[in-house]
Amino acid sequence: MNSPLAQLAANGVSIWLDDLSRTRIRSGQLKELISSRSVSGVTTNPTIFAGALSKGEGYGEQLAELATAGADASKAVFEITTQDVAEACDIFRGVYDTTGGFDGRVSIEVEPGLAHDAQATILQAKQLFAKVDRENVMIKIPATKAGLTAITEVIAEGISVNVTLIFSLQRYREVIDAYITGIEKAKANGHDVSKIHSVASFFVSRVDLEINKRLDAIGTTDALGIKNKAALANARLAYQLFEQSFAADRWTELAAAGANVQRPLMASTGVKDPNLLDTLYVTELVAPQLVNTMPEKTMEAVFDHGVVPANSITNRYEEANMILLAVAACGVDYDDVTDLLEREGVEKFIISWNELLESVTGALASAK
Image (cartoon, rainbow, N blue to C red; front, side, top):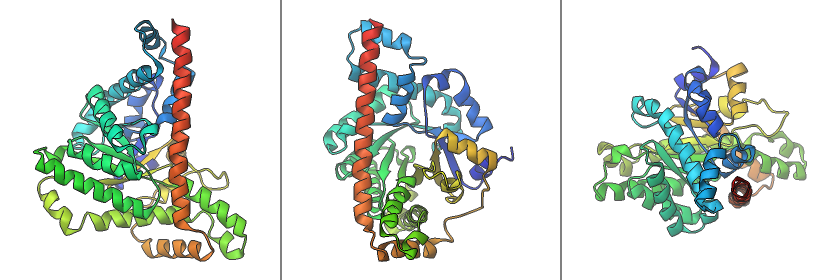
């Protein structure tokens, strides 16, 4: 295949689909994407599952069984989502084996309401891992302050983790430290560290959305001239941090023991502004050992008309620094933006989770 997506994969970017539903799994469409779209993994979140269950396709039989068994909505959501993820893991097992565990991954997230409770997050991460019972599952944990503690402890148990909702470079530093500390503990606990993998999901488009809003409010020529540039700059500097962190002495010893780097993952890569090129947050973020998780619409746009460079990150660090300095010079507070986006990210997932519970409550009642 010579498609832009195949070229993207050849240039070192793992293409993960940011969507999952039982219809997609059982129709054979998910499996078909492996060959036709170079898809090598799947990510999910509460919003994705809320959307899948609201359509109801493919869930009727299991909902009826759960209703008969007297399951409440929380139990039903746990059973339904873990089954979808387990089946998706089976579909991607071949990819997992051929890539030595780097790809073929399917992610499932802890309940967003636990985002500020480290111990509850750790407990549920273990429960999800045990229930899915597949080597290629990744447990998603948000990069809140409490999440950092949970990341370390879950990694220390030998469980692979997808760290989600990262917006700031400082928080990303803390995520990398939490991962490395977890690997050190896992090694001390006797785990085979070569089996533990992690990705750090750095959110992209939402950064532009919020900073653009503030630049518009400022309204100067300088401010308007740097719209739609901050998110790519932020993501590129995150990749620089990845390169620096896993070249440091602390990591060298762990790498010698077989430990895997925590790969940066670019999330929220669907373009929110219709005036922007719909492939922007994919083709402008190309470098080795990167993951890009895309909504299907974005993936299809790249397949159809994406122009994929060999690398659009590592030669742009100076430019990226200058852009963030220019944003600050215009009066936009970077820390305030990223703090707000983290809070909003957790809140949005909690809303989706509550919608999911409400939808399943109704479905259980109807199935009785």
